Length: 273
Length: 254
Ligand SMILES: Nc1ncnc2c1ncn2[C@@H]1O[C@H](COP(=O)(O)OP(=O)(O)OP(=O)(O)O)[C@@H](O)[C@H]1O
Ligand SMILES: [Mg+2]
Image (cartoon, rainbow over all chains, first blue to last red):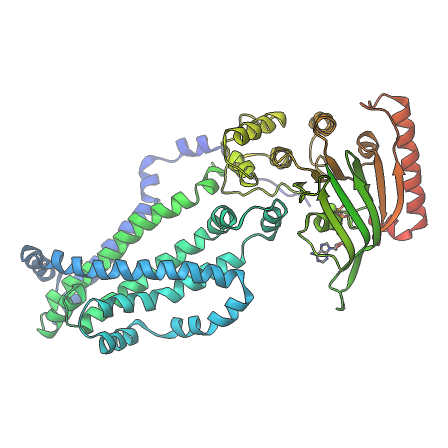
């Protein structure tokens, strides 16, 4: 039997062979744009078919009104303040507990069950509980964000730490590298991908948490404002806020996390270009 | 320089289980002062395991082992592994600095000097992934030299390099060893290399016993072309052939 190896083209040849319009159409950007266009058309169709689905025009109208009244910025300022504190706490606590869990079997045995419990409790339960505990203020959205996000960070980081190469750990201990440097130069870079994935989860799930807590708490914020329109039976206003929620997450993910990931993995990209 | 004492050392992987595997069997030897010892033996006879126990990254099952510097301080150890073992997310220079005690001018100068020595002076800011396998191995060698250890242990450091690079580094190793008063434990399965470099060759046989402890009493520097070197190489090879003939296991594993 003879295997044939197809003739392959060099990267330079490939680049010149494909016409530019086909390169644009076949690009990842084109795939993204296609999604947004399809989603928009679907929305228009649904709004035309059902009375209780507000159409794009009325939603844009509500958005403009909310912006002009200053509601958007003041409420998001509140929400972001709570969200940022909650996520930051969950990342700090999550990375520390995750590293300890990854390094020590005892710590793993101790934390395994509470983390599992934490993973299985939905944000809405924490939102109810914290409003009961802390009443209407900043504490309940902050604590809800923290409690929903922290188990995800812990699980990811612990997994990353357990995966740190045994060979590199042996190398470090044979040279007597001090613990602090080992954590900084070996453990953290090795787990940075996992930390990043954990923080990304924390942000998305924490965003759920903060909005839910605001929905049930009575102290302002984006979640509270969405509920205001919902209670008033104004679906266009409600939908306007839902859109804002989504936009925030997408922007955060693309602007912050894409960049962080690219920086954390420079060494890998450099080795393949 | 260091004092290395190995006394009645045994290592069994998975002791007490069905997969129990005796790798080192009552090994005793000691090395002191400016001595260059090679450990040779067929693949799988426990050479890397022995180095890992000496360096403290592997536990031993019974017996005793101690490594001290010859003035009684804890010995500084340099270890060239069988594979490069570099941090992939740190540049070459940062990999070298990672195992250094201090981060000062003197240390940085020393690191650059040893990088130069292995021919990688221009590659300090590269990531390991951008270097070839042999270049990475040379970084591993430079890293061990640059800590200026009392005891330098090397696990087949030159076996992945081309003949000419390997010969150059072997010559530099001899120079460094002669100048800097180190104790070296060097693993290889290349007998020719062992005779060229060593004061003493410890031959391990499969099952991890010491088969022979040969003293190489030749003047230095040694040259391949020197007939005395060639004669001794042939003689040591012949002894290894005899060991192979005596232990049928070896024939299968070499
Ligand atoms: N971590 C481990 N767990 C169980 N067995 C091991 C472990 N490390 C090594 N061994 C076993 O110990 C034996 C000796 O391995 P070692 O790596 O010391 O051989 P070596 O002499 O260095 O061989 P080579 O020349 O091929 O590098 C082998 O049979 C191997 O299967
Ligand atoms: Mg080996």
